[in-house]
Structures are given as structure tokens and as C-alpha cells.
Length: 340
Image 1: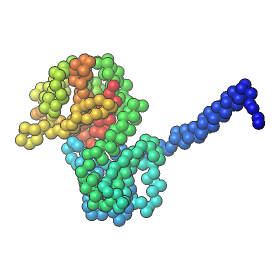
Image 2 (image 1 turned 135 degrees about the horizontal axis):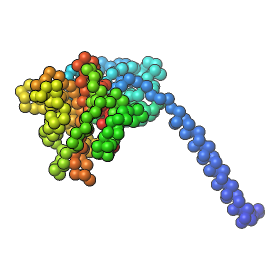
Image 3 (image 1 turned 180 degrees about the vertical axis):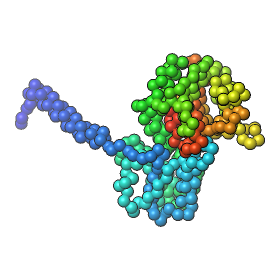
């Protein structure tokens, strides 16, 4: 019987360990480049493809998909669809759609008890968001999509906004970045074209100063009273800040939140959300010039700075009477997500 000397036994142990580590590193080295070299995803802003069985794209399921994905973008003065929608079928050549940034897969599985939804990231390209909705029948999936339309649309809208925010972090208005930092110590990345500026008391405006496709950023803050953020308080504080800092061409003109025809309810949609791990009041709405004939859309994120006991408001608004507004507005919304 062969007996290994203790010293040789220790050498064999070290050699085995070294070989194992080398093999592990070699295996890891093979996987990492594959992940790293996934193709860059493509697609126009808010472009989405639905991939589904050809026979299912009819009747109730077709109507549900189009009602949810082609609904109006909130809140704009006219209809512009939430997404640029493409539909293709599982028996078609799917190669052209493999690297699209946003993909919705519809799968019918008669063996399922009820519909489900799943989300995967960077499956074929990066960045990429792929959502699969599966269910036992077209009817079940159609009902599921209508009941969970906010969840479904939020997944894709948030993914697009985060993609836009990443572009802005690489290329943005340095003037706005530095102006906000000087005012309050915070930073934000807004489009490069925002070059004009105005600084007030706890207030900053920067904008493109264009007659069309005009984008604007606003920051203001006010003392926090210890209460939860509310839509009613938001409108009051917003109108006060805008009246003091965004005048019109005439002395009796200033920006204000638009109201419905009876003059009672502000034209806003507000909800509390978690964005970048912070609780914010997200408000989409319409603005107008008091005693004036111009207006447009805005989006605001309102958050509490508990350390300073202040409410911080970041807003993007646009004026684009002759051009589409969705992408202009969404770019400003994405910019608000870069606030630090």
C-alpha cells in the first residue's frame, strides 16, 4: 500500500487547489465576455413590440392590447399614444425584433390555471426589458391585461425613462447642473439645450427659450410642515412659486396650473411612487398663462428632505404648440430622475 508523506500530501493539496482556481477563473473568463458583448439594444423612444400567436391577435385580446398600449400619454393637450406599437407573430421571422429595447411576449398555455406576468432584463441585448404575459386562453389574458394595465405600462415607461436618464447623465446641460448645485447643493442632468436661466429665492429656472419644442426645468423648495405630501398642497405651492418667478409678457400675466372648464379642479394626475428608492409625489398636469393664450404640459416630482425639513420640487414643462409633445415631455420627466 502506498503511503503519502505528509509534506507531499500538503503539496498535492496546494496543487489541486491551484488547478481548481485556474479552472474556475477560466470558466468565469469564458462567461464574462459573452455577457459583456451582448449587442446594444435599439428602438425609437417608447417603441415596443408585441410577439404573440397569430391566431390570438383578434377580438377581445387585440382590443385590450391596443386599448392599453395605444392609450393617450398623460397629461398632454391632445392624443399621443403611450407607445409606438409593433405587433409580430411567433411563426414569423423574429430576428429583426431580438434586439428591440422593449418586448412584450404573449403566450397561451391551456395547462395554466390563471394568467401570470414575468419581467426579464437584458435577455438578448442591453439595456432591454422583456415582459411575458401567459395564460390559459386569449380571454383570460385580455382580462388580465385590462385589470393590470397600470402595472404593465409602468414597467415599460419606467424602463424607457431610466434609459433616457442614462443618456442625459452622459451628456447634459453643465450650466443647469452647476447652477442647481450652487443654489442648494443638489444636481440634475437636463438636456443640453437648456441654456437660459433665472435664479430666485429657493428657485431656479433654466430653459431653451424656443417658440416651439421649448423645454424648461424648474426647481423650488419650501418648509415642510410634517404632513404627508398632497395634490392640493402641491397645486397651491406650485401656483405661488410660478406666480412669483415665471411672469408673462404683461404685468397681469403669470404661469399657473390649468383647471377644468368649470374652474374648480386642476388638470393634474397625482400619485405617490417610489423612484430611485425615494418616495415622491409624481404629478402630471397642464399649465397655462394667466390672462394669456399659451399653455402646455408639465411633470413634477415632489420629495421631502427630512434632514433639512424642506419639500424639494423638480419640474419639467414644455411649450410646443406646433410639434408632437410626448418625447419632449418624457425627456424632461427622465431628467427629473437624475436629481441627486
